[in-house]
Structure formats: C-alpha cells, structure tokens
Length: 484
Ligand SMILES: Cc1cc2nc3c(=O)[nH]c(=O)nc-3n(C[C@H](O)[C@H](O)[C@H](O)COP(=O)(O)OP(=O)(O)OC[C@H]3O[C@@H](n4cnc5c(N)ncnc54)[C@H](O)[C@@H]3O)c2cc1C
Ligand SMILES: *[C@@H]1O[C@H](CO)[C@@H](O)[C@H](O)[C@H]1NC(C)=O
Ligand SMILES: *[C@@H]1O[C@H](CO)[C@@H](O)[C@H](O)[C@H]1NC(C)=O
Ligand SMILES: *[C@@H]1O[C@H](CO)[C@@H](O)[C@H](O)[C@H]1NC(C)=O
Image 1 (tube, rainbow, N blue to C red):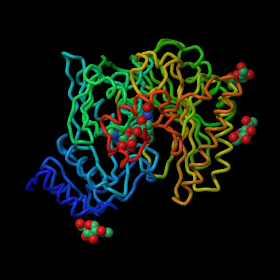
Image 2: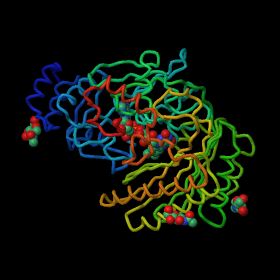
Image 3: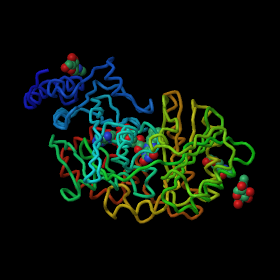
Image 4: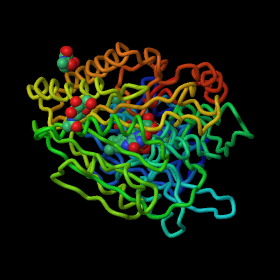
C-alpha cells in the first residue's frame, strides 16, 4: 500500500467529509494514510467482526469500518483525521466494557489488538505491555520468569480499560490497584504526538490518565512494577441454596471480611441466579502453594456441587472460572465500607426479588459479587497519585451487580432494574450507618447514567485543567465513556 502524507489525507478529508461527518469517507482517508503495519477492515470481513466484538453483545455496534493501528505513529495519524473530520469513533482494548458506546461506535472502530508485546525488564523489575491484549496473555508471558503484575481476576478481561480505570486484582491487598503500580505509559495525544509519560515528566497527565480512561488520548503501552510470583492456591466452588448452605456461606463471608488480615488471602463470593435457579459461587485465592490453616475452612466445610481447588499457577487459577458471555449484559456497583450480616441478607434478598421480577423480561443471569478486600487497599498509592480512586481517605469495597439477558427490547428495563437494585442496597448500607452517601463508584462497574462526579469526585478539577491543555479541541469527546 502506498503511504500518502498526512497533509494530503487531511486536505482530501476536508473535501470528502462534510460538517455532518461521513464516517465511510473518513475510513477511506484513514486507509490511505496509515502504514503497512496497520490495517483497515470493512463490514462483512473477519477483521471487522473481530474488531467490533464485545464481551457483552449489547456493547457491540456496527461501525462504518474498523482499524487496527500497528504503530503509535499510525494512532496519531488516525486521531488527527478523526479530529479534523469530527468523526465519532471508539477505542477498544479487550472490549469488556458493559456500557454501550464506551468502546463501540457507529463511526470508526479502533481496535488496539496489534499492541500485543509483553516484555519483562529484570534490571528495572518492570513489565512493558501493549494495551491490546487480555490479562491471560500477560500472565502466560510472565510465568517463565517467575514474576507477575497487578491485573484481572478472571479469564478474558482486557488490559486497556482495566489498567486505565483502576484495576482490582488478586494481589490488591498486597500491592494496591493496577493504577498504583504503573510507572510509565506511552500515550498518543489528540494532536498526533506520541509521548512517554512518567510522574516526573508530567505529573498532571500521569495523574489524569490513571483512572481517566480515554479522556486524554490513546495509551499504547504501559510499564508496571513486577513482583515475584510462585504457585498459588485456590479456585472455584459452587454451592446450591439447599438447607442452611447459604446462611453458612453468608456467615463465612462476614467472618472473612471481619477477621482475615493476611494480605495474601482473598475471596470473590457471589450470589447468582442462572436461568431461574439460585447458585452461589466463590473463588478462593491464596498467594502461596498452601494457605495457613483456618482461613478458608468455613467455606470448605459447606457442601459444594462442584469444586476446583488446587495448588496451581496464577494463570490456571484465573482461568478456573467460566465467564464467557454471548449475551446482553450490564454491570452496576455500590461502594461499601463493610459487609455486615444484615447487608449480606439484603443482597441475597435482592437476587431473589429481581429473579422473580426480571423473569418477565428475558433475563438469564443475575449476579451479586461482594469483594471483601482489606480496607487498607487504597494505602498502597500515595494521596493524590491517580484520578481513581478520587479519595483514599477510607477503603471502599466495590459490590459488582451483573445482569444478563437475551433481547434488545429489554435493554432499558434491565438497566433501570440494576439502577434500582444498587440504590436500594446503598440505602440499606447507609441506614445501618455506613458513611458512603458520597463515596465514589468504580467506573469499570458503574452503569450508564452514573454522573462523572460520582466516578471522579475531587479528581475532576485537575483532570479538566489537564484536558484543556492536551485536548483543547475535545477530540476525545468523539469517543464514548466517562467524559470529564
Ligand atoms: C468478566 C469480567 C470480569 C472483570 N473482572 C474485573 C476485575 O477482577 N477487576 C476489575 O477491576 N475489573 C474487572 N472487570 C471490569 C473491567 O475492568 C472493565 O470491563 C474494563 O474496562 C475492561 O477493559 P477492556 O480493555 O476489556 O475494555 P474496553 O471495553 O475495550 O474499554 C473500556 C474503556 O476503556 C477505554 N480504553 C481501552 N483501551 C484504551 C486505550 N489503550 N487507551 C485509551 N482508552 C482505552 C475504552 O475506550 C473504553 O471507554 C471485569 C469485567 C468483566 C466483563
Ligand atoms: C459518504 O462517503 C462515501 C464514500 O466516500 C460516499 O459514497 C457516500 O455517498 C457518502 N455518503 C453521504 C451520506 O454523504
Ligand atoms: C449464621 O450466623 C447466625 C448469627 O450468628 C447464626 O444464628 C446462624 O446459626 C448461623 N448459620 C449457620 C448455618 O452457621
Ligand atoms: C427485598 O428487596 C426488595 C427490593 O429491593 C425490597 O423492596 C424489600 O424490602 C426487600 N425485603 C427485605 C426483607 O429486605
């Protein structure tokens, strides 16, 4: 393919794409401007289908074309064309956002999949990773070196949105969030400039991008702190709502959150309804080949219909839970200070209440995940270090609510239901004295319609000043997401 200069492309752009933006015309401009390292795909091709694919089918859209940039320079070329033609676009990492339009568009779909390198730097004890891969790729690349970085807990999640939004990991009790462990990143600014950013080189941009998603440009590479990683213990157990199983499960969860202080131990309990049938699951994790006696005994004593617990690699543990989705889905969240017995009961009641109610719609899965991190989880990063979390004054435990369903006509109904459920549980927590009325919520879990004030809180003023400097024409507003 012959490479035309950007200037030629932009001149042609003014001629082809008018003020109302013709995304197809913009695609033609991009096709002629990008290098051989990149590729553009049209509808009906396999590349186009892959680039538009999302974990939740409700997050996919039919774009005018898709483009897979292969170099940061090409990302710059693409951003300049999109900006000058004012064409809506989307940036997709792993495509796990559950809000429609956050990484999908009817305009130009950018897929980051060609940014796929994972490089361990043993001298610096850091790892460089491209933003177009999933965490499984990172873990399997690092396993031979006996090191790890702070990333996703289940299989298939993209590194891009995860690393730029916060990042709750199995290692968070020991080392904080993913954003707390980033030491540098390469970002392509809306003016096309490719720049490496550290806290020393540009403190405001470093702060703003870590938590700020796609508001400031497109991140192509991240450098994160590496930690030694050996065999771990744990896996998945599935518990039916028979006899006092769930009561015991609730008690064990409350006790774990109240009493376990070993930062290497973690659990992810969840209450689900799978096509109408109640099922609880728990993923247990210990960062070592054998957990100390006692920590997980209460959970192990509850009869399980399925159990996959062993000493294994970190990757094997992450892949122990089946989480493929081929259905419409939405997440929502409440930030909690603690898990009391009453709150746990209210959560179980929510699964029952909404199972009955949503059976009328095409619901096929309802899930409430409680995440009992140590309340010291935000102390691993310094105050004012990253845009998310906007306050580190108190530890907050994200509750993840997840509904899945079949029919597009039920989208609004399901989104409304998940808003009501989160509001109810927040009210229950406040009523029992939890100081969470103004607590920020995790953007990677929050449903569309949540205000950016609720996601970014006190970080917003600094983010907005930075935004004005690096994106004065607001090019990144052409892409969806939590917009500052
Ligand atoms: C099954 C499942 C499990 C999950 N588990 C966890 C968990 O354990 N811990 C946790 O913290 N979260 C978890 N999440 C939430 C997860 O963090 C978000 O879905 C996250 O956005 C995924 O990143 P992605 O790259 O796949 O998403 P995408 O949908 O590709 O992107 C999400 C947002 O980030 C932006 N973005 C992506 N890449 C870039 C880039 N390179 N430059 C600029 N902007 C970019 C996109 O434009 C979009 O707005 C989970 C989600 C699912 C569906
Ligand atoms: C958009 O551009 C394409 C190709 O450049 C052209 O064929 C088409 O007619 C244009 N559509 C509109 C609505 O302007
Ligand atoms: C759960 O805890 C409550 C309160 O301590 C107790 O009454 C109940 O018997 C416990 N249930 C089980 C199954 O252990
Ligand atoms: C169960 O949940 C519904 C819906 O949120 C609520 O109206 C009801 O009061 C709850 N019941 C109990 C016992 O908590």
